[in-house]
Length: 383
Image (cartoon, rainbow, N blue to C red; front, side):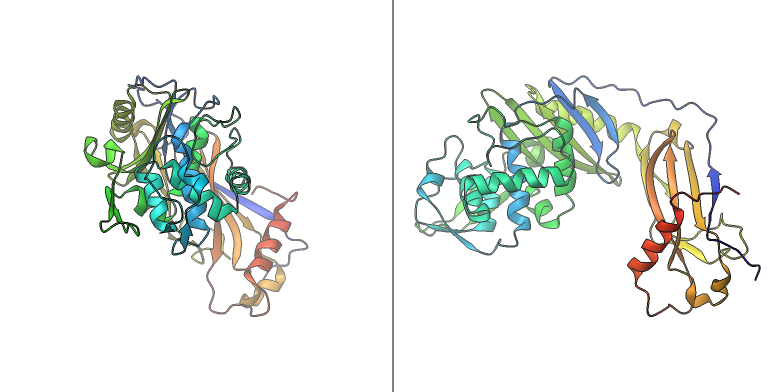
């Protein structure tokens, strides 16, 4: 094999089509809400927005975060003793009684289906140790997942704090994160839940308040309603059709059910997911060392309109081989990355793997990963 003095990177760019100016899907949407957004769940691409980054009150869609933290606590099977303070919570209620014990999982169902403020306080006290402790966890999670314009001050969304604020965009981020959890999906997609009632001879039966889910829109998969006098009507929902998963959020929306249906219909009519990169061997690579031996672990799809389908550019960045690699066992597991651009914007980066018969035993996956990206920084050369 030819000798190389140093490790450098070379790039191969595949332009699928970049000569056509993209034509955006007609925004045939006129929502009643002051703030609104529609995103595609997997990619996070924004398909429609209206003042989506304005901070406002959000009412009970706050409870999406409360549910997420309860589920992620790993305590859903625990029995929670209901406190006096939980029972005294104002507004919507599932009529808990002080001193009774309710499974945390059932409290989350009561929280999300009936919007129980008493359930929200009970969850917060149990999972966070106190209301203040739970609010700290809420803001910590918000920061972790990129909700940059959100501040939580309570677990239910009541107007008891001036600084309890978020945006339509941030609530879409939260819902996108939540929908990655199968337990959350199951709970918000449930129309009716029965919970044992320890103080009575009959079970509690809770029907979901989300009318999109219970009959208005057949493609609905979940969501959360909200209302306070100051926030007005707020709504988060999700819907799936033809392999396209969408999330809609409206704040202060007097006609929110129709707002969401209109956004969904426009999204489903104009967008579809296309496969930009396929799983398996990368056929575009012609380099003698890598040809037929590099592959992607997974495919990459992205939602576009018909006019946008060709507007992708894919760049393959690979480590240039070095002399020591004559022993195939020394070739790193990850040898580069495939970078996808759409309208000049980077939308995805996937690792490129090298296929070999043997794997070097003494070097971990993370060693390979660190070695690869240490070599890339500052030494890019285009061939």
